[in-house]
Amino acid sequence: MTTDTVTPSRRKPQGPDAAAGGTQRTRGQRIRRGIAWTALGLVLVAGGTGWWMYDRLDSNLSAVDLNKALGPDRPEKLPSSGTNLLILGSDSRAGANGELAGGSSGGLSDTTLMVHIPEGRQQAVVVSIPRDTLITRPECQKKDGTVLGSRERVMFNSLLPQAGPGCVVKTVEKMSGVRMDHYIEVDFAGFKNLVDAIGGVHITLKEPIRHGASGLNLAAGPQKLNGTQALGFVRTRLGVGDGSDLGRISNQQMFLTALLSEVKQQDLFGSPAKTFEIADAATKSMTTDSELASLTSLATFARSMKGVDPNSMETIMLPVAYDKVDPNRVVAAEPQASTLWKALREGTKIPESAKKSPATGG
Image 1 (cartoon, rainbow, N blue to C red):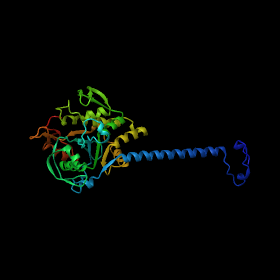
Image 2 (image 1 turned 180 degrees about the horizontal axis):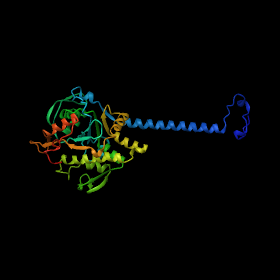
Image 3 (image 1 turned 90 degrees about the horizontal axis):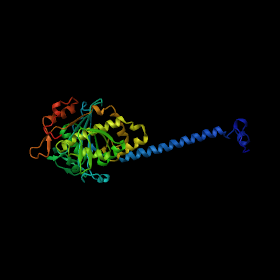
Image 4 (image 1 turned 135 degrees about the horizontal axis):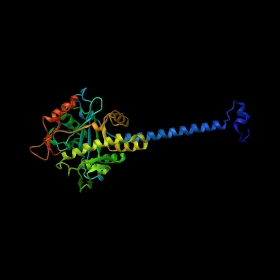
């Protein structure tokens, strides 16, 4: 068989291959075969990268089995109760959080948000529970299996380090009579990195906020906060309201709305690289209930929330009054608190009277 290079269309196949049925390939066939192998290689590489990305994000998540931690003694899941999510911001100094100011070694629940999404998933209600609220802690099982007995006049933010996420959820369910469907906990580093991954969040301040200890120095008017500034903004108490925890709750609620609006306004998911960066930041410092503890479950849940408009989201602080024994602490104000929880359980409109707190620090 000759090895001359001849245009295939001008020369018939020769030699034993031609006699046997023609396995000698033309240039066009070789090109098409090369393209096919190249395409297959790209698919395999992309598939491998996709699997690596999925596996990394999936392994970022930590989980807590709420059903095991809480047992059967839980509020009934009512058809009218929609979806209820408990979100905790933890100030743990573990890991990367140690570099951020103001954390605690035990990991207190610095921010607690009960998010209620009604049936139809269009308008959410966010209820902030002040960290200084005195509550009755129910009997809780700790991570090591030991039982922590019930106790009155316990500060709400002590629940997480004392008995773990299950006890926080159990306490909120006992307070409200509302069954929590899901749990998400994000620590300092996760929050900061998420804001940076998004590219910052725009807010507008009515008054300047200056806090020398944390280095927070924000002027009045519109501005864009990076992760470090955002963390300082949602945590600072000085210069906001009466300087108590009640004052900074308004900052936390404002920022939550701005963050969700930022996600909706930007084409964050138009770029696979950007999507991965945001998902990596969001999952790296996140603990969820076991039902949400996979990338697939989180993505499905997130897609189901796409109809919720941040601009129509209602933010409320649990109505509280100053404690008569310790004015530095607050207690749930009645009948406002019971009216609020009843409306959320039954999926009805929240009366204006249930949104007002005798404690005016916020």
